[in-house]
Length: 107
Image (cartoon, rainbow, N blue to C red; front, side, top):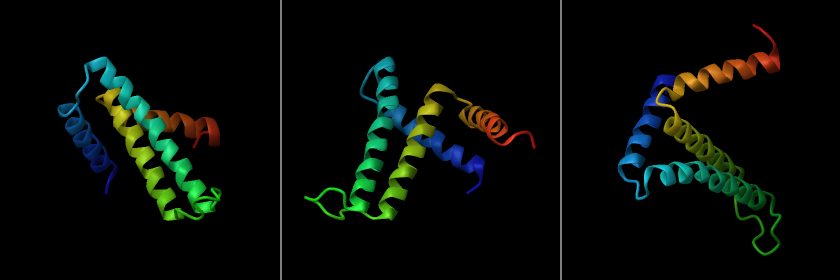
C-alpha cells in the first residue's frame, strides 16, 4: 500500500468515527487523544504476556500480538493527527523530515 493509500484509509476511518461519535466536539476530541493511552496500555499488556511476567497468566500473548498492538497504536495516532489536521499526511511527512534531520543530520 502506497503512502497516499495509507492516508486515504486513515481519512476513511476518521470520517467513519466522526459520523458515529456520541459526544460533543471538544469531548470527542479529548477522548480520541485518550484512546492512544488505551492502545499503549494494550502494548504493555501484550509485552507482559509475551514474556510471561504475570505468574497468574503465564505466557498469555505472543510477539505477533505485540506487533499487532503496536500497529493499533500507530493507526490510532494517525487518526488522532487527522482529527487535529485535515492535511495530516503533509504534517506527518514534514515532522518526520525534521526528526530525521535532527537525529541523522542533513542528507
